[in-house]
Image (cartoon, rainbow, N blue to C red; front, top):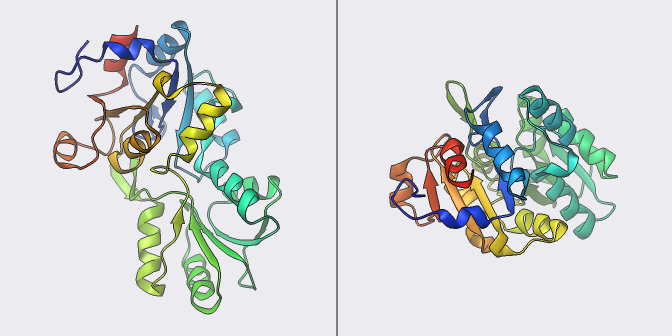
Length: 271
């Protein structure tokens, strides 16, 4: 019943809403981590439910569904809440009818358009520049973004502040790193929508009618996943299967409630 640092984690058996990061937590690229399927089954067997909350805006919910189904994970659309969905809600609430230039993947742009957002990929008078985790990034997109931010008075937002994205050989730059590159060229830095803001957690809790005491966040990044849990007032679990290390946890100002090597260790407690 003990976590990595010897802390009693038996209260995890009472949690009913599990908010799970994806990349670096339950899988890496196309490789599911050992123990993930057992872990997810134990959650539902105990009367709980899980929702994948991810800062990765490069894929739509449909893309994610196809991906996890290939891995054998049971999930429906209601099992996902992404930074792209949170950004759409933010735009609809605060900037209805705004014209948005999006530096992002085709999947993100299509998701915005399907939600009724007026999206353009051209350098023209716009109201908002939106930066996503763009795995299809080109020099022309970077030039367009810099041109708009330099010459137009626009709102500048980004889906997530993650510095890196875990891949099989290590990491590649994520949205936060791309935004830093843009800042070096324009002096502009965006408002971030996804984790560590508590918004995604609060929305899912409200949708699922669960209290903070029933909720736990699991992720591999201290400055996004764990910070979001802290900011939302819920239990947080850091796993060492992705970005964060033991050294990071010991020296960082953001501290998870519990720490485990991977989700298999969490399964061994809640099964």
